[in-house]
Amino acid sequence: MSEPRPSSDHNGTRPEDFRHLVTVLDLVRSGRATTRPELTRRSGLGRTVINQRVAQLARHGLVEEGDLAQSTGGRAARQLRFRADGGLVLVAELGATSLTIGATNLAGEVVEFHDETCDIADGPDAVLGRVEALFHEILDKIGARSADVWGIGIGLPGPVEFATGRPIAPPIMPGWDGYPVRDRLGGAFDAPVWVDNEVNLMALGEVRAGSGSQHDDILYVKIGTGIGAGLVSGGRLHRGRQGCAGDIGHAAVLDDESIVCRCGNTGCLEAVAAGAALARDGTRAAETGRSSVLAEALRDRGRIEASDVVHAATRGDRTAVELLVTAAHHIGTLLATLVSFYNPSLVIIGGGVAKAGDLLLATIRQNVYQRSLPLATRELRIEQSTLHDRAGLTGAAFMVLDELFTPARLAQWLHATTPHGIPALADTTA
View 1 (spheres, rainbow, N blue to C red):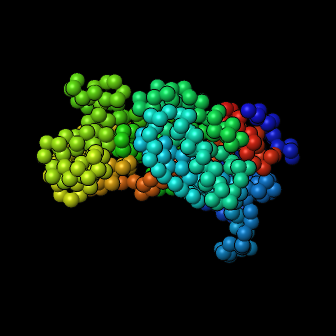
View 2 (cartoon, rainbow, N blue to C red):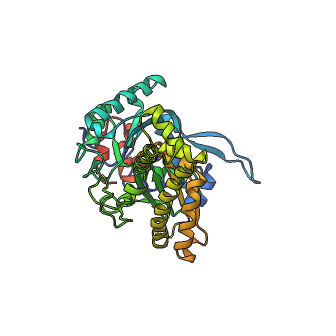
View 3 (cartoon, rainbow, N blue to C red):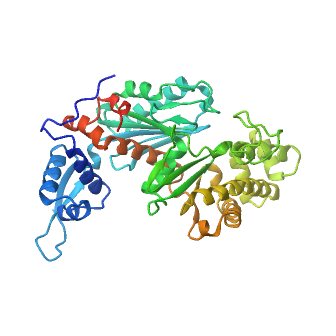
């Protein structure tokens, strides 16, 4: 793996100047400032510094000038635009039973997308081998080269040590413990790779490009095969010391030793309310004749999945509705504690089970509003995800871009114009 390059560019930029460079770049790429006068007002930097940094960013192909902006009484300023088409980010979200991959531009916008079923329990060699093959297929499909890849973002359905990009004792991922995901993909594509828990990336995607874009403090809850949460505090993703913040699926909600979770403990939220639990309870309802709709699905397909329970509930099947309401009750009860503790302004519900819509949300809202402190719920909104199955991909892209555009890392690759070819960037401290 190649070594990071020296922390100054070939024009002799002082290391401390990269902080100003990133300030200007962030304002332009976020759209908060699109002219030099706006940059001066929003950044607090002088006109000379702004002109120098804009010229430097343009020289390296990150920013370009456009048409004249509308005049406000004086000389019209030239508009500035971030060159989002200057490179690509490859992204993948690995769930327990699904795989979603894509490519985004440098603005985090998904330009190509693919999803398929996948069993994470097949192990890292099989699953990541499939990810690599699909990445190459996507590059071919959009007419891009591996050299166009600026970075790779991966979301995994388990605890990830963010500093190393390695899953640590993931409950539902046999064979993945300590696996060097970053090293493997970085070597395969010669680009820096960052890895995080999939729900963290969904939360990041929503706060940067979804329903959380106007909120600084949000809680994203994914209800799929498992259950997890991502926390954004003060506009920044909160990972915790080792990167496992938000692992609410294994919080105990029942004192019942007969309900064994995949993590080995009993009474976990995931074991009583996640998609796998709905499928289990739905199968029992089909086999015992409590639900004619689910019994029909079992006869037709030979198995019951959470989506079958959701579908049956939307058709008015009483047993399926009861299963969903019971799951939502457990989820809402735990969320009420988190809302009082964390005091977010927005709770976003995502994942496959969230497709049940108001059948699920109504019970969750009821429990949260009844059990949380009044002050904590005064301005609280609880909504369904707006990015749906692209939240994780979008978040993975922003994870990569945010890491690439820190002052310390930008100083290591700016002189080369692209971070491609420097996979060791991900190993350095931002």
